[in-house]
Length: 183
Ligand SMILES: Cc1cc2nc3c(=O)[nH]c(=O)nc-3n(C[C@H](O)[C@H](O)[C@H](O)COP(=O)(O)OP(=O)(O)OC[C@H]3O[C@@H](n4cnc5c(N)ncnc54)[C@H](O)[C@@H]3O)c2cc1C
Ligand SMILES: *[C@@H]1O[C@H](CO)[C@@H](O)[C@H](O)[C@H]1NC(C)=O
Ligand SMILES: *[C@@H]1O[C@H](CO)[C@@H](O)[C@H](O)[C@H]1NC(C)=O
Ligand SMILES: *[C@@H]1O[C@H](CO)[C@@H](O)[C@H](O)[C@H]1NC(C)=O
Image (tube, rainbow, N blue to C red; front, side, top):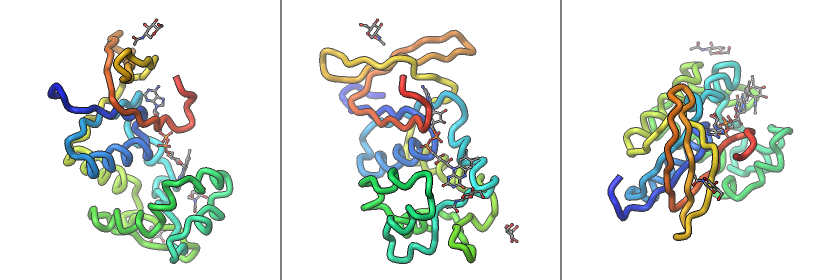
């Protein structure tokens, strides 16, 4: 990374972290975006929807989230967050078709890749991230976070298999650690 450029560290390489990183690079191409993932990226996406990955609900024709939220009883409150005011189910579907993933909507409204394989969703995200220059580091755990005197974030990363410890500094932080407890 060249000196003087700002750095966003995304903590967690699940659906939220990888998409967030792609989005950050889309709106701010000069930003250095680093995703730190302790295991494999998008591993929950792989098993979601029984390996087929139901991406969204296609019966939300007016793109309104409250209808989508009703279909996710356990995530109702989360779905009312600000993200979904600007990025509804129709935006999700057009994002995938714009990025070469054909989707189909089943009778009950669930939307799957035509391939019936979550790999299509994973491959799409990983190739888009790579193409946009997202720097993905896997097998590294964020163990501590601190603030520096200069107002930046400082993270300690550990690669346990190699007993390696390194530090990384960031101007911006996106926490996308899923249901894991924060460090
Ligand atoms: C069996 C199953 C089926 C599902 N089916 C569907 C479905 O069909 N459709 C649907 O929409 N949703 C489904 N879900 C829910 C969906 O998987 C989650 O909503 C989604 O994956 C959450 O994404 P996330 O990025 O917020 O979190 P996660 O996918 O949990 O990603 C967080 C990432 O952060 C990493 N991480 C955490 N702590 C650290 C650390 N200290 N250092 C480095 N990395 C760290 C984790 O390893 C993980 O990869 C399903 C879930 C399960 C378990
Ligand atoms: C997605 O698929 C999984 C597995 O089939 C199911 O448990 C979940 O309820 C589905 N979600 C929606 C919104 O259809
Ligand atoms: C995808 O899965 C659905 C439901 O199991 C099935 O009806 C359909 O034929 C499958 N499509 C392909 C291309 O395998
Ligand atoms: C963060 O601060 C604590 C307490 O001051 C210190 O022990 C730790 O080494 C610091 N971590 C990093 C990554 O600098």
